[in-house]
Image 1: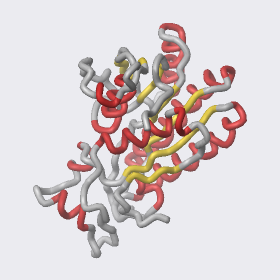
Image 2: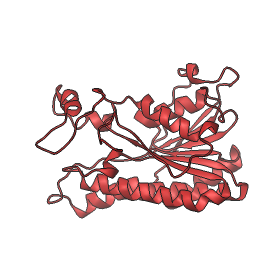
Image 3: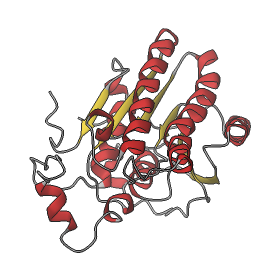
Length: 266
């Protein structure tokens, strides 16, 4: 099945400088979308069509426009959305990928760290989604996908702030989807598990980190990965692309876990 619905569309992606966000940008561009790629510093984008194999035969490889954006700044988000609409045209698709990790135990977790985690992972999604929804609503069309985490659905040691922020974000997106459904705007969630990104590898103390992640840990009550491998950024991006596509046109408020079965979720 070839995914459709991207050619000529304008897509906004946050957290686009690397990992999952960069993979989403490449796939959107290769599928014919004009992509606004944002991160705290304007992403350095590869303008080569390195994912052309994912594009439809008729799709033209479109442009990438990098912008610096701090998603915790509501005013900056509003300004950028207005700039995109004025300079490039109507935003059709939006993907929230920007996120930060917190690995402090609850007993050691400071208030500043708690607020920092929520400011990006939850407030940032609120700011971007609200601003995008406001321009999509009069047109009565559009699609948004937010990259959350499987940690939103299962307790994790030393990840309380991260898991709580992702759980809050997941429910916000589902509520947003409920409100926007009558306007023809779809809002969905992709919940990755352990994925080969700097966020994941930065938690490893040595070269055995990958094997330990896959195996899980009884001591910390963490299940392993039944498929026996980490996700790659493109695995998560593939799920995002499906939920944005015409082929997912009757799907909204969905929370799609892409974690190799790690959460043993029904």
